[in-house]
Image 1 (cartoon, rainbow, N blue to C red):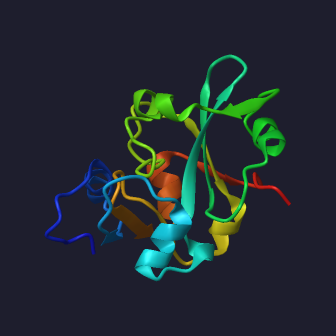
Image 2: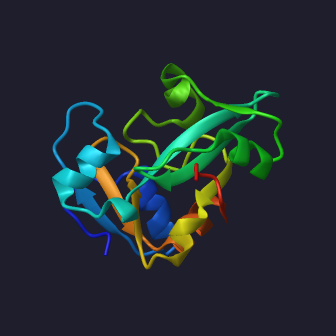
Length: 161
């Protein structure tokens, strides 16, 4: 659990400190590829692989959403969930400055600041889920409740449909 010859990411160190078990997956990748391609590379079920999206509200506050890779964030539901009138996705060029992560390596654990985070409620019923390990080429498998605890998040209905 969590033992690997790979250099530990900040996410792995945080999970180790919190005594949260995880399984790390690595893959060769020089640049961003979407989460569906990563799931295919690693032979993972689409239903268990989640992506992390960062939004900004009308007052400039940032909000984080973790949703299944083949789903779309419902910006209206998400805004209502976090008490905002409207949300929009942050520009990719701002992702590193806001979160400390690059596109393709963004995860809800260990961001530069603690942001209000919502994990799609479908994850709650899973035994485990997979999210980015905090850098391109790294994915983490952990229990949804552990992700929720590690990022200070909550489960909510935030996807289209």
